[in-house]
Amino acid sequence: MEKQKDGILYIVATPIGNLEDITLRAIRILKEVDLIAAEDTRHTLKLLNHLEISKPMISYHRHNEEVKTDVLIEKLLEGQDIALVSDAGTPGICDPGEEIIKQCIEKDIKIIPIPGACAMVNALIASGISTKEFNFLGFLPLNKKTRKEKLEEIKNSTKTIILYEAPHKLKNTLSDLSSIVENRKMVLARELTKIHEEYIRGTIQEIIDKAEGLKGELVLIIEGNEKINKKDGFEKLSLEEHYKLYENQGFEKKEIIKKIAKDRGLSKNEVYQNFI
Ligand code: SAM
Image 1 (cartoon, rainbow, N blue to C red):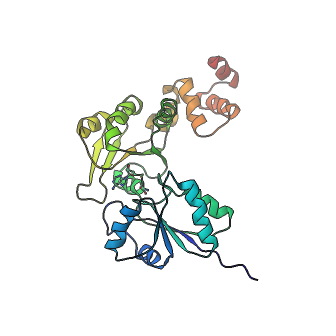
Image 2 (image 1 turned 90 degrees about the vertical axis):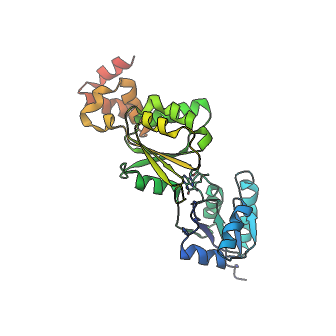
Image 3 (image 1 turned 30 degrees about the horizontal axis):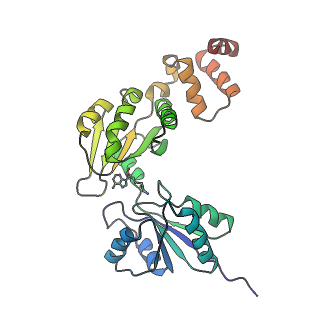
């Protein structure tokens, strides 16, 4: 007997505030699928009601991702089409999704992303800061050690940095960033697509002054480290900073030493000696 056709997993982006920000295709897919897997079914119900769509839902969030992935895979293998949505924006971007997508790929189940709103993309394009190369770091980790590593990465990044942050953690994050980013340009994009949408632009100190008591959803955009961007700026870095810069770009020790030697007009031996 021929194998029953598998279902399709649609990864559907939903609005990040303004309910008009959903595509015609996303609406059609939500109407057509057999089941909607939602991060918070009550939250998604509001969207479905607004769109006049009635559809069975199943919860799929961080805390049940593992178990529910198995359930959803079973349904897909039975031939059901499923739409995966998160509370806001694009699933998988700081939201559940990764696990089921990996499993679908392993089981050869078709995945179709349905593009739409994503807070970091909108914050970036409206920031006025370079969009050529960027590094999306999501939320800064709370663990002291990994947070320090991320802050170090931000310090040495020549690329634009994008961070998500919750309003009650903003003060702490800005204070951690203050010693790292010096005079680099920053933009705080707040309440994107909503009534109180605003962009606070300035240096870290100016942002700290303006951000006191800010509420709502936030994205932080930080300009890349210009000091490092300038070719002749390597001398301004300590050897350690210079080393970290290349380490963060994924180079191995041997290559890093070679690159530093070239940048600084030193021999590899001189670089080694200065490290000891
Ligand atoms: N999947 C979402 C996306 O595509 O952007 C992100 C989900 S993540 C759990 C939530 C974070 O995204 C918020 O803490 C905030 O940093 C950012 N965010 C979501 N909606 C936003 C909005 N309307 N304005 C500014 N930031 C927003």
